[in-house]
Each structure stands twice: as structure tokens, then as C-alpha cells.
Length: 163
Image (cartoon, rainbow, N blue to C red):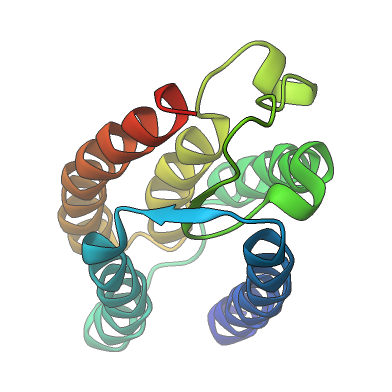
């Protein structure tokens, strides 16, 4: 089950990257400017390393079964993730791309939270490894993710406030 689960998540992430690239082309055609590009490569490294660590730790550990409530919670969190894609529409992207003068999206979860997508990613970095008892990956990559998100949110806030 672990490999099917990880394969499913990887396929979803690849589809998301395809959508992000398509949205990026549209955003740039509308005059969007990119912010925080210098740290973007670290997100690629972090997320790639996360999956490598999941697989390595799983193969090296004494696997004792799934923690079902963590996996159920993960799938509930995906409902909120989908709602973010719907709320942002063509504005959703993995990069910080801002079209000056456009109103910020204030629907869905963005009505209540400034950065709901990052909260979801934080939960995923906890729930995916927790679901399989992969505590090393959960702790190390959650910390690394939080450190990188501090940089990301600071850059995004500057970009959005300058809009």
C-alpha cells in the first residue's frame, strides 16, 4: 500500500506542476512579475528530498503498519487543497507571480486565512510520513519546510503588499 500511496501523490504533484506551468504562461501573458525566484529551487530540492526520504526510511525501517487516522486526515486535507485550486483558478501557481493592480483573491479559504495553502503543505509534511510511522522524515522535513516557508511567506507578503 505504501508504494501505491506514494505513487499516487507523486502523480498528483506532477499534474499540479503541469497546471502551474500552464497558469504561469497565462499569468506572464497578463504581465505578472515573479518574486522570490532565488529560493524556488530549494522548494524543488525539499519536495524531491521528502519523497526520497520517505522511500528510504520506509525501506530501512521495521514497518509496522499504517496509522489509519493520519491517512484519513490526509485525504480530508486534500479536500481543502482542492478548494484552494478552485478559489485561485488561473492564479494558482508554485511560484510567486503577481499581476500589479489586480485584487487579491478573497474567496474560499482565502476569505479566512492569508496563506491556507502553506498550512495544508505543513499538514501534509506531517501526515504523509506519520501515516506510515516514518518519524525521521516527518521531523526533519517538517522543520526544513517551516524554515523555507518563513522565507517564502516573507517574499510573498512583500510581493502582495507591493501590488
